[in-house]
Length: 238
Ligand code: NJP
Image 1 (cartoon, rainbow, N blue to C red):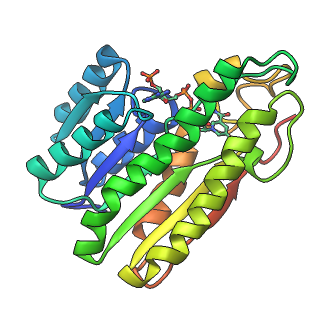
Image 2 (tube, helix red, strand yellow):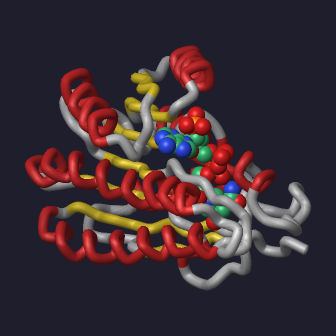
């Protein structure tokens, strides 16, 4: 098992990419703290993990709320004693021309996609710095590396995540902490059902498990080696 006795916090773990990461990391031996707003889905994840002999704490919470984030981090450390891996995965996009996008929709995307990443990073890092080790994986997007018509603000939040990730990487590498942005193209999840006017067919895009496998690679390289920025594309989406 590649992550035996490691402790991982995964945000947005109730479905899609986050759930696939939580399941794979658990299968590889990690203890999981899973965060999302939908408790029923988190309970299903917990049962799946426990049925295969794993350990899972679940937290009904919003990544953009500072008190929720502090609670997850504190209770994870109280229960499991450490935090080895943080996967900032929670995120969403609203597909609209910018003139139709409301200021509230702007604020909500910035709050979840960027403020949430900032908050979890801020509260987890002191533990990783004390341990002198850790891995932070930010699930960004290929939209954070280019411009996307009708997704200007979503794209901008992911550019923000990529800039934040690379800056933090320089800040904490002296503590042997590795920080990565993993930027997928289209993945077959709830996200791609709502975002985009002309999504590629489901059987041609990435599966959540492909992103999970890539996250596992990032988390399990020898400590001297860091994948800091990665684009994962569907090979032949159209
Ligand atoms: O989407 P989806 P994905 N606080 O909708 C949670 C990026 N990405 O797995 O709170 C806490 O199935 C939500 O749970 P709930 C994308 O930008 C995707 O595809 O219960 N959790 C659910 O577990 C995002 O960053 C594609 O509703 C919150 C999860 O987030 C990441 O991949 C392409 C929350 C979303 O699951 C995962 O998205 C790409 C909050 N405030 C990047 N708000 C793609 N799928 O094509 C949401 O380039 N969640």
